[in-house]
Amino acid sequence: MELILKKDVENLGFADDVVEVKNGYGRNYLIPQGFAVLATPSAKKVLSETLKQRAFKEKKDIEDAQKLAKKLGGFEIKISAKVGTGDKLFGSVSNADVAEAFAKEGVELEKKFITVPGGTIKRLGQYEASVRLHREVVTPVAFEIIAQAKK
Image 1 (tube, rainbow, N blue to C red):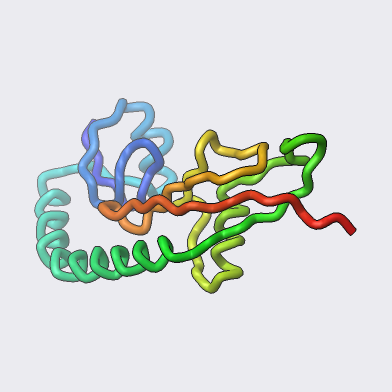
Image 2 (tube, helix red, strand yellow):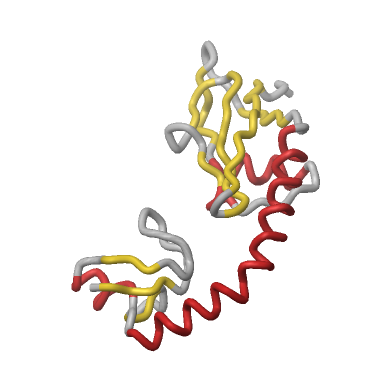
């Protein structure tokens, strides 16, 4: 079944992509949830017109994302966490914690666009997450997990 995505779908594609999926996935999930529409010939024509009009705006969005990527590279993010014996954390650090640390620095990032290695981190140290600012702009950001000061 050929569909046009209305929204970004994890592990499938981005908005306005034409994708091929199994019939059940399209009929039972993507279309009812509003994530996609059938790729009829008329819908494809409308999509091509929309993409032509959006090309100029897309170029500006990519430039803005690249500027933000350079800005993110300059930050030194330190996330403090409670530590047990050795360098093992109580709990874990995830993409939500990284997004929160950037928010404290004045940069709002959605946690769904941040990918932490392994999903969660359970030890102290230096790590690198990747941040998707645009479908064509993915930048690595370094951060460090440090021990929280004991009271």
